[in-house]
Image 1 (cartoon, one colour):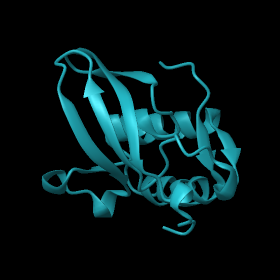
Image 2 (tube, rainbow, N blue to C red):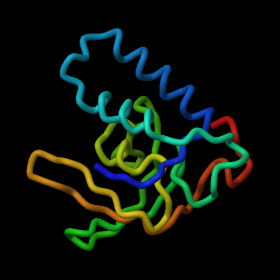
Image 3 (cartoon, rainbow, N blue to C red):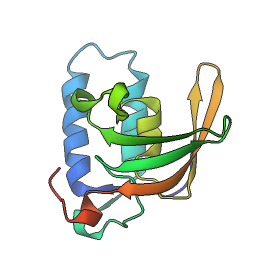
Image 4 (spheres, one colour):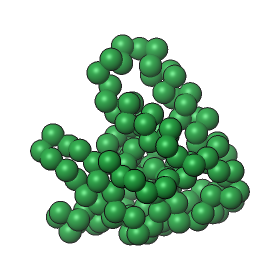
Length: 138
């Protein structure tokens, strides 16, 4: 749905591929979330963790988003499914918005399909990116 270049760290890609492999072993015929994540990963440019631009959303990044339809801001941290907690604004990578923002940069506008149509957000700011802070293994 989005044609911009996205960046995935090699470390994140390895962990996300393991997640997909594990999830695919269960009955996942109708898991569109996993298919979307797999599609996004396949088109990403893989970079070393020490070379990923500091304005790119990676796993465990904390980002400020703007819903372009409601003009509402939100701050979320992109996490693996077991760490997801909506009450703490920790969104899973397999959620539609999680998959949608992975690899995109501050300033990018992202669209994804929802049952009611299309959602649109802009990545306003990367508040914390592990790699930019020298945290290469979280």
